[in-house]
Image (tube, rainbow, N blue to C red; front, side, top):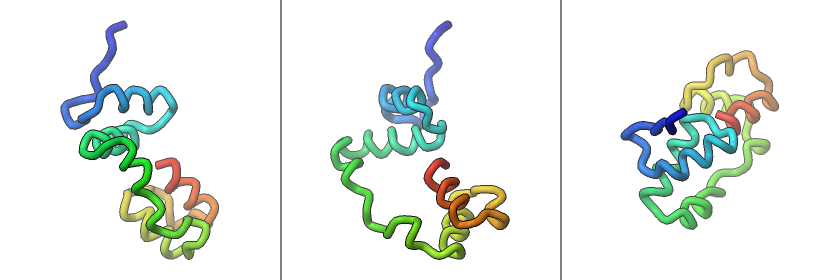
Length: 89
C-alpha cells in the first residue's frame, strides 16, 4: 500500500507521521509538526509550562478552554472528563 501524504498544510511530514504512528490525532500531530517546522524542535518542547496545570483550573475555566478548541459534550462533563478531553484532543 502506498504511503499517504498528510497534505500541503503540514510542514514536517516526517514528524507528523511519527506522531500519528504514536497514536496522536491528525489535528494534534499537524499542530506539533507545524510548530516544529517554524522553530527548532528543542524550542517546541520547552515552550509549554506557561499556564498552571489543568487540575488547578476551575470547571468553568476548563469548559471555556474546551469551547475554544471545539470539544463537543463539554457542558455535561465533570472536571476529570474535561481534563482528559483537553489533554487528548
